[in-house]
Length: 357
Image (tube, rainbow, N blue to C red):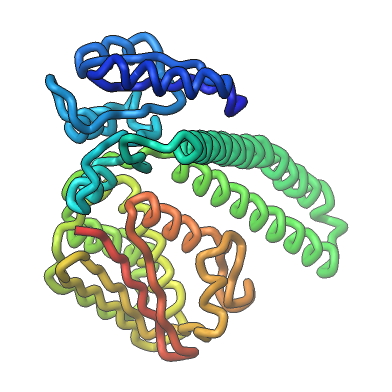
C-alpha cells in the first residue's frame, strides 16, 4: 500500500466536518469514505476494510468510545488503526480512548498540518506492522517447510548406514564400527534438531485458545510420565498448591514438558535429585516456579538460555537440541507473559513462569 493512496473512513455525525476532513485528505491523494452513524459504519465495514479510521468521539446514536470498543472486539476490524477526532480533551477521556484501542487523537478544531502528520504517521506504522507480520509468517512457514523436507534424507542416511554395516559385518574392524556409530550418532542428532525446529515453528504458528488451566495437574502428570522413562532414578518431587493460570492447555503442556524434562536431565548426575514446584499470586501476576538441585548454570550466560540452538552445556555432558527453552520463551510471550531463570553452577536452577492475572 502506498501511503498517499490509502483508504480512510471518516466517522462523524456532522456532514460539514466530514466534508472538511475529506477535502484536506483528498488533496493529499487519499481515498476518503464517510459514515455518519454507527449503523452506517458497520454496513460499510461489511463490504470494505479501510487502512485507517478517523472517529468522532461525540455522536448521537453511539459514542465514539463505544464504537471503537466494538471495532477492536471484531476480528475483521480489530487491526484497523483508529484516530479520535474530538473537542473533548480531558485526561480521563483520552486515557479511556487509548485503553479501548485508539492509537491517537486530534483535537477539534484541528490544525491541517498536525492532522495530516498524524494520519501519515499511523498509516506508516500500520503498513510496517503488516509487513513485519507477513515477513514473520513467511519465516515461520519457511522453517516449517525446511524442517519437514530435511527429515526424510536423514532417515535414508541412517537406513543406508545400517545396510552398509550388515554388508560389512564380517569385514569390520573396531575402527570401522566406531566410525559408523559416529555417523549414525551425528545423523540422529541432526535429525533431532530438525524435528525440534519443526516443533518450534509449529508451536509458534498456533493461535492460543485461552482458558483457565489446572497447571498443577499438568505438572504432576508430566513428571509421572517422564519419570517412568528412568524409574531407577532417585528423584524427590515436591509440588505444592498452585494457582490456576489463564492459557492454552496444549501450549502449556509443551512448556511444562520442556521444563520438567530439563530438571530431570540436569539432575542426572546427582545421587538424589530434588525437583520442587511452587506458585503464588500477586496483585498483577500468577507465578509458577520450577526449581531443581542439578548442574545449574552461570548467570553471566543467562541471555543465551532462550535463544534457538544455544546451549550452556556440551553434548558430552547432557544431550539436547538447544530448542526447548526457546520454545518455552516464545509460548510465554504468546500468552503475554514471560519466563525468568536463575541458576548457579552445580547448585541448581530455578525457572519462573509469569502469567498476567
